[in-house]
Length: 125
Image (cartoon, rainbow, N blue to C red):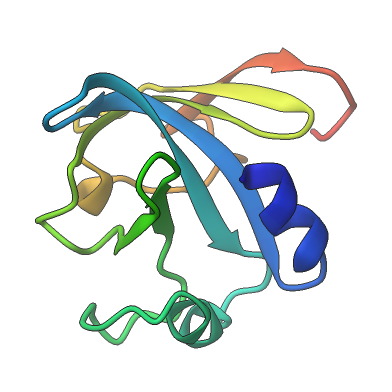
């Protein structure tokens, strides 16, 4: 699903895999969709037909690929309860923040205070 989203919306969205813990599945993998440019969050919410969320226009969407449900990162009811790692096209990051619930995380992969780069297949730094 992450590859499909990346190819269909290559200009607007980036898709990642979020590895963590969910309810009721336990260890799980969700597709994480992030707007490529700041301020595109409104388009993301409309694309996935999501309601709610704050006024932030940089919200992240999590998709449970096994059942097709989508949640904003600001949604406290998101079944994804912890994020431990993020996998992108060329990199893998580990979450080193003190919190791991999606609604409390910072999604800045360039700042080493929030994520540590584990594998880098291309030079992105």
